[in-house]
Amino acid sequence: MSKLQKSAWVNLIAVTICAIIGCVAFSLLYLLNAKGIDHIFVFLIVGSLTGLCIYVFYRKKSPEAGFDEREKMIYKRAFGLAACTLTVFLSCVCIIPFFVLSGQSVIKVYYLPLILFSTLFVAQFVHSTAILIQCSLEEEDG
Amino acid sequence: MGSDKLTNKLRRLRFENDQMTQQELADKAGVTRQTIIAIEAGKYAPSLPLAFKIARTFNVSIEDVFQYENEQS
Image 1 (tube, rainbow over the protein chains, first blue to last red):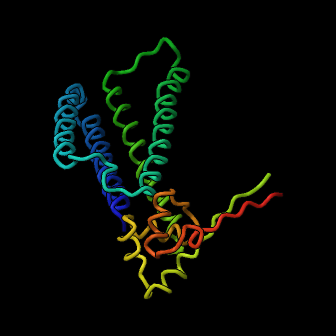
Image 2 (cartoon, rainbow over the protein chains, first blue to last red):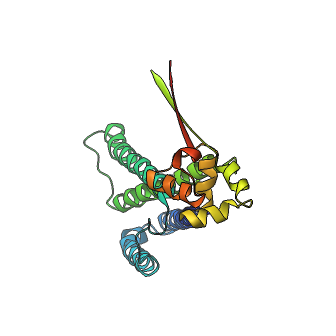
């Protein structure tokens, strides 16, 4: 398994675990204590800062450093796909409620970070999955 | 409308050079073994610098390793 595949697997597993924990935490806060959800931004800020610190500590180099030309191409194609997915997903998440709920409705503010994190999760998920699929398609004869 | 086809003799050249492994060739060319596998299978067309590196590893010209065919239809 190449460095690119390893990093894609690590990314995919980390993102999936974070998404599961996030969904469970959000659901529990929502179901058990409706007041607590107003303070969810504190958890989001602490979680984001912790994630950022881990990212900065472990990723001193560019994510592409150490990849050969084929891996860089795969990485860039996956990045393009993830960027497209992010745009489409964010557009859908913002536009669909507008038409479903009508223009006069309001949504609670805590849905905004949820939308942001969901979009980032989907983009990261697509990026890692696209890398793994491309690698396996090119290596299936090996 | 024509279709481009890039074939190679990497596998044969490796065996003619003391049965060089894919990993050994990858180390000499400065790429991963997966890239050599993809090139051998014809699933990835290498850049010119990489094609030259591979050809020089076997001490042959680039056209002895890679063959380009353009089929006009």
